[in-house]
Every structure is written in C-alpha cells, then in structure tokens.
Image (cartoon, rainbow, N blue to C red):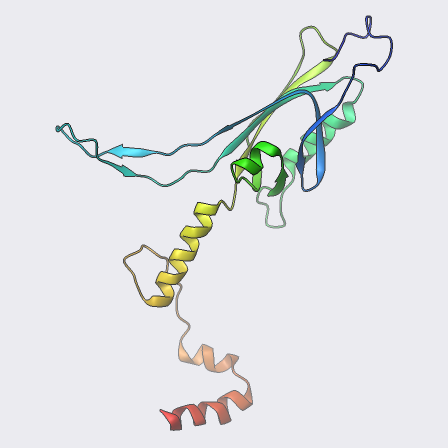
Amino acid sequence: MIENSSTNNGSSGRVDNIVLALDGESITLKNPSISVEYDLPEEDQSGQSSSTNSSEKGIKPKKLNISGLIEYSTPDRLSRLIELSYQTENGGAKKIYRIANATANVINLREAVFSGKVSVSPHSSLLAWQIGFSLSERKSVPEKRETRAQQLAVENGDEHVGAIIEEVPDEQEEAADLSWFEQNVLARANDALG
C-alpha cells in the first residue's frame, strides 16, 4: 500500500507490482486489479413458445480491465502508459500489443489494443494517481478459425459460408506477371498437355 509521505519515512513496505507487460515492457502499478469480461451474445429463437432455442451471434473479443495506482514520485510511469495508449501502427490503426499477464494467459488472450477510456485521477488520500484502462483482444483464436474457414471456403469454391471472394485478375494481367520463359515455354507445354 502506498503511504502518505508525511507518515512514510523510507521505502520499507513499498513494493512495486509488475502484473502486466506490453510487448515486453512492464507496466508497474501499486494495488493492481485485473478483471476480464467478454460477451457470448445470442438471440432468442422461441417466439411465443416455451422453447429455449437461441442462435449464436459469434464470440466477441475478450477485454482485460486494469486498474491501480501510480505514485506522484514516478510520473514517468504515468507518462509512458499514456504514450503507449496512443501508439499506432504504420497505417494509422491502433498498435496491437503482445500481452504478458497470468490472467490473460489463462483465458488465452495474447494480443490486444487499448480500448475505451483511459482514466487518470488523483487518489483521495494517497500521493498517487488512480488509473484505469482496458485492453481489447485482437486476432483472437475464434477470429483466426473463422478466417481460416473462409479461406478454405474460397479455395473449395463454397460460396455459402459468406466468404468474401476477391476479384480474379483477368488473363491479360496474369500474362503480364509471367516471365518470358513462363509465357513461351511453360505455357505452351501446359497447353499441349491439356
């Protein structure tokens, strides 16, 4: 627990808790609290009957909610956390962080972005900021499975899965991408073989 500086005459009893790392960079908090939430939405299919049937609406991303304290004596930690929350990829999308945390590992949450609100407020009785933020899952296991299923559907010509089929380049574009050897030797051999 962080003590008020008037009663704290040293650093004894002050232990930093590293409970989270983002891309290997530790986030150090006092009195950390981490919780997980996720939705498994479904829609009632019973109509006017007593049926318990429902339709699934997909597995939604998991969210890791983190809160804790950062002491006034370590403002660089708060500045760095704010900086991490604003990071973006080359295309301007939010930066996806690799997460190291015991709770995240248990629920198989590996990659996430800062999501929702980041709150920072002075603690009412301690010389510290109370902070809170959420990390929302990206590239989840269900999402990867769905993507693979769509790719297989496209490869197998199954259009009923709802897969997005890319435009197939016309023969002239394909021919332009072929080398002289491919166009004149391999293509003729392929045509001859049928």
